[in-house]
Length: 124
Figure (tube, helix red, strand yellow):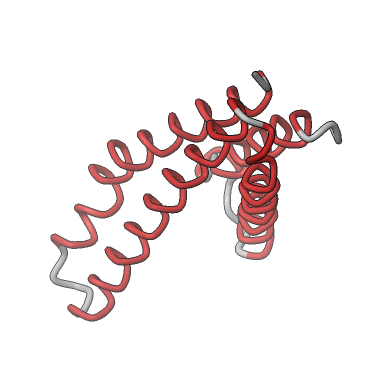
């Protein structure tokens, strides 16, 4: 059992649940309810939100599979590279748009997941 991958998988699953519950209530529902945004933009946002949900769920599964069997380490590499990419994108969005770090905590979640993944790969 690779405990680092297990922790990364559990952490990613928790982020996925937070995304679904909190993001659903405070982000995507208000976007869908507003009349100030056109239908195409609303449903493009809704579609993207679901893609993030599916990606997070897949990442959690990748880590959990790798945690239980080393033959799945390539999945952990993939999930870790995604976590690093999401971390870097979050940081770049915050910096370039001059946003507040605490208003967009995704960077921290992905940094932690990436660090756990790197530790599981023996790189952290």
